Length: 333
Image (cartoon, rainbow, N blue to C red; front, top):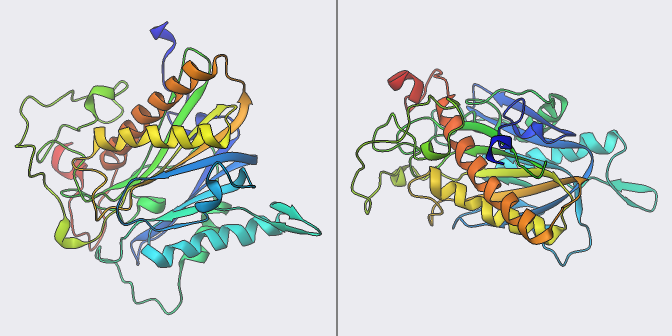
């Protein structure tokens, strides 16, 4: 049974059939945006556990709301300015004829979330908010294969001791369902034990997807963890997805479970200064065999995929001019 459990062919969230991901970044500003798109509207939910979230259209994802499906999900840098990335995506989707039909109009449903990367060494003295452009560019770049590390919404991300980044991972369960995670890691805390090289997510690593170093042999004092609290530049935002047929309430439960991945891979997580948020998406191509047990395993897989994706984000980050932090790869590869 366990031999059937393995990452998908790409070890990306796009192993969930019908999904694509697009990235755009601005190296001068040190920021970017990431879009998750599907071939057709998909069911979505959300759960927020950080104390300082920034989001768009999350209220409509509650299980009691009328519209159950969305056209895309957006992750972006830029703090409140970055919410405009979703506007760029929505405008472009409308031009493509996509969106919720209201009379003779189509209104694309594009929830989004942002992280704070405004004091990361980039030039933020822009004459016009760049995020609408970045959102549209990310949508145009959407494909099944995409880069990890210093790309998209993770382009300007940082953690307590190393650069953050964009991460993704997937798993195929014995039920035949695929689960994937996508995350922009800009955490207050750290993804590594002490100063590394070992990752907190090491127990869940598949192969050598983030170095194959195994677990640490020693651990720091746990009650006062390393943070970048003085920098005020935090938040980890992510998406978990599956090909299972899920209701909006079941998507919400999967997003809730996926937050365990944050706690397993970031030390600490869900702080008052983080806006930690996770969307869940279900493309609905594979029915559940057993509603209770399948949703249990989907939620657990979402959490472990998320933990792995967080480590991969930091592992794949690359150096750039005016960085305020080193990359993990510069110190430990």
